[in-house]
Image (cartoon, rainbow over all chains, first blue to last red; front, side):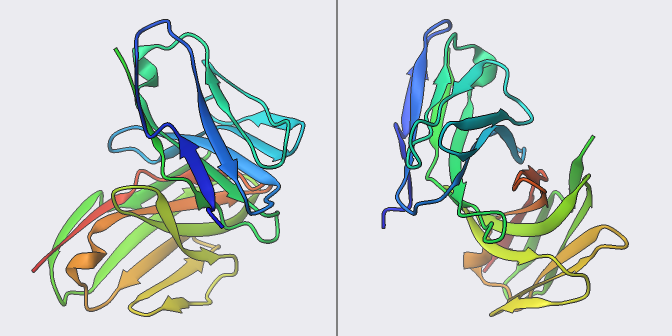
Length: 113
Length: 110
């Protein structure tokens, strides 16, 4: 199993550009999450999904959108990139509420200039 | 507002020392407390604690949860340079959402 994979690893955007961060897991996990981590800070939840077709906002959803059309994929969309979105983005997944250890992807480092 | 506070923010020790990392939490609908180790990339899972007073151990690492006082500690004995990392504590709410602390940066000097 590849686990949780994320692409790209690095990206530089100009203010106002848009992009999609890809996240895929091959563990048949129902729950998927997007976090951002700013320097010296813990991870903050952006959006999460409890299954295909179901998404919900986390702590810091503004400026982002998600979709969950399949169990495996959970892309994160930035529509109008802003410097405040410069961060490292982590995708994670877990099987269920009972088996709820979250497995993290390697992260995407995004810089908005 | 839900919050998780870790202390100390950073710590420098020598190889062989024992360290104790602290985590306090205020989270509605608390379910579990998790510890992660983060080196250069993604956090990797260490422990999940659901019940008070039951110590979990893995090699030189151990952790315990106190649900009455709302805190957890992570102990590392006989530290090694490979233990240098950021240690993240997270409180899990119902619905599997994690609220993370800012982390403790541990540096182990040889």
